[in-house]
Amino acid sequence: MPISAHRIENGQTLVIAVEGRFDFSSHQAFRDAYEQADGGVERYIVDLSDTTYLDSSALGMLLLLRDHAGGDAASISIENCNSDVRRILSISNFEQLFSIC
Image (cartoon, rainbow, N blue to C red; front, side, top):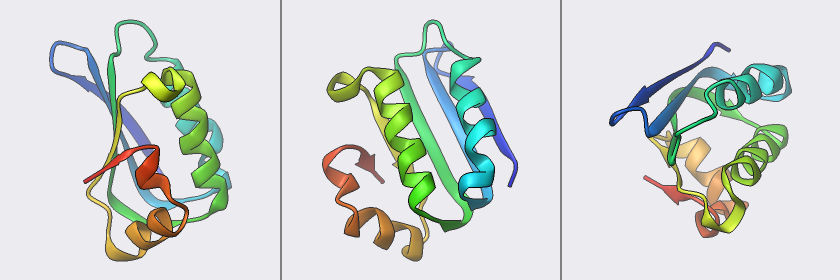
């Protein structure tokens, strides 16, 4: 369940990568990833290429990130989802709140 974060594009974009299960056990690590990187971040990318599972607490964590990043004005994309994760995001209507690639 490791979560890592790094900046790209001159530090203005924060990429948060989630590996394995994205569930309640990831809460603190996910929150730390974006809170500790605060300052100068204009865009967030949540990379789910290595994510095997997503539950409702993960959906809540994504909403907390959205609030932290500025709500409706936030620039957040969720990228590289497998078909199961994409289906959960779609059922939850997250494509209305996030850019899902």
